[in-house]
Image (cartoon, rainbow, N blue to C red; front, side):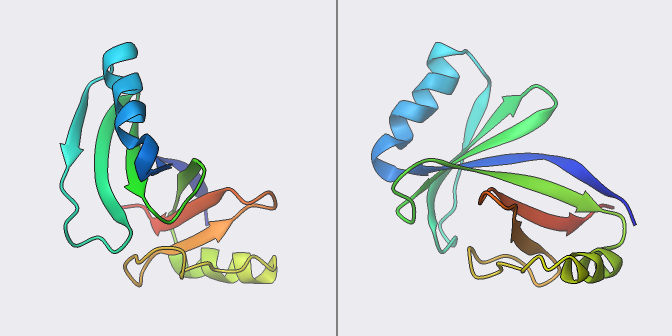
Length: 121
């Protein structure tokens, strides 16, 4: 089993700060971005995909947060083994945070940072 950092970083932004935040990354910093339509997403009202070096930064407008939160991606080469490993380490799956496919999990580190865990292909 091997766990690595993924290329996706999601920043959950309060709806009231979304446009200002997108403008900072695109107009102020000059980063390439495209708005992604999310009509069926249960919590994300709008999303902007930003090219952030080798990573993708997702700016997600949501009413679920009152302050900005950064969410990260972890990839594993064996999801079943990683699930067992995390359970032995007393890491709880937080899959009620946001709707995701059944073959993925949300977890948190000890200080509350959120990670999506998925199998790499």
